[in-house]
Each structure stands twice: as structure tokens, then as C-alpha cells.
Image (cartoon, rainbow, N blue to C red; front, side, top):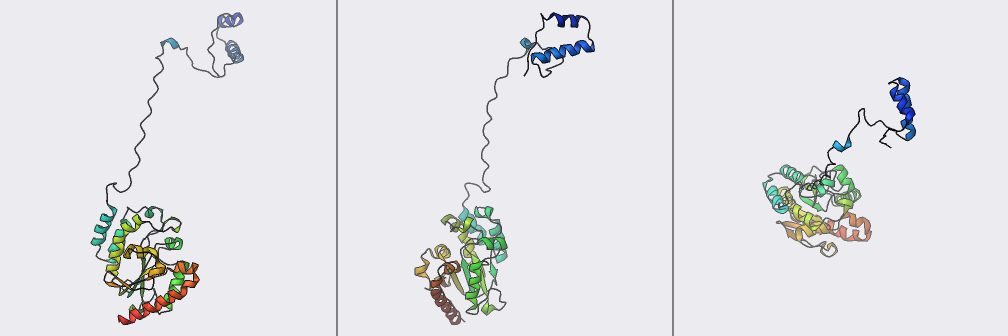
Length: 277
């Protein structure tokens, strides 16, 4: 606390002041001020507060800074940019580079890894899944988790293998989305639409004999239809090649009774490959 002290009537103190500025006089004055409650030295010289400038007016609040703009212009058309970028890709390597640089999909900001593909690019069979899961996001390859292990067993049952160096037995695998959605949620229509041009270019560059769509998301993206329990097992044509919708292995892990239909679809795939030989 601070007190302004006005010394006029305290005679003992006046006598001390008149007797000279000695150590003991100064100490007595200091002790007296402390007894009055002064606990801090304000300055070495007196201040005439009537000569001070009036208190400055309070400063006006600074205007709030504008929010940081997104990394891409608000007026940009993500689908148009994806179309242009995908069209310019002459090779799968070019396409992977273009996709990895695409900044309009917010999933990219939360993903650990960009997941492009796995297997042999010139394989006769190309499989399209939905999106990376937790383990795929960690490793950077599609279908490496529990569902991926089941997929490998399914393929092995008809002599196919993503790791095969034999053209006849090889498989190429990718997803609709290259980045993991939070909590493995289903991709929304906006995310699918902006990445669809890359997927279509991916299929064109890989140029498989047969295309397999695993689950609702790739069917919705490429065929414009969902309801995998109704459309699975029925061959159609997409981008100039035979296409077969199938159950996603993750679904088969939850619904083991559906493995009978999955086996029928695998046999149908094997027969189709033989017919196309």
C-alpha cells in the first residue's frame, strides 16, 4: 500500500530534520513512515501531481484479426482441379504425386500416411476398397489389417496373390480415398466426388482386365449405386472392363454367414479370368 505523507505538525520529527541529515535522523524518519504504513519507496524526488498530464484516454480495442484463410482459395472448385490434375498424370507415379499434393481434402490433414496402392500395377485384377483404416494409415499400404489378412486368404483360394511376380496370379489394390477418415467413418459424398477423378485415372493407367469393387463406397463412387447385399455377385461393365461388386472383407468379419456368397463371387471371378484368357 502507498501513502502520501504530509509532515507539518510532528515536532520531534521536525527537530530531527533541523539537526541535519545524519544516519540516525534518516533512519528515524524511515521508521516513522513505516509505522504509518508506507511499505515501498515511490521515488527519490517529490512529484507535483497537479502538473501531471491528465490520465490518457483508454485505448480502443484492437479489431480482431481476420481468420486465417484456408490453404486453398475459397473459390476453387476441388473437382475441377482434381480432373485437371488427374488428366495430366501420364503414369501411376505421376498420379501418386498429384494425389499426394492435392490439398482440398481435409482428411489429408488428420492422416498419418498417404495410402496409394499395393500389389503389381499391371495385374489382371484390380481391387478397389473404401479407405485406409488405422493399420493402413500407420503402414501406408491398403488392406494390411485384419480385413486385409482375410482378403489375402480369399485371393489365395483362387490362386491370386498381391505379392506374386507372375502376371497371371498378380493383384493390384487401391481405395477410393488415399487418406484415413477419422474413426474409420464412411467417406462423405464431397470427399468421394473430389477424389473420384483420381480413382478413374488410376483405373485407366493400371488397365486391369477385371475390376473388383469391395463394399458400398466404391460401388457408390463408380457405379452410382449402393446396397451391396443386392448388387454383389452381378457382373457389370465400368470404364470398358468387366466389374464385379463384392462384400468388403471387414463386413465378412462381422457377418460370417456372408462368406458363402463371397466364395461364390470368388469362383465367378476365377471363371471370368479364364474366359478372358
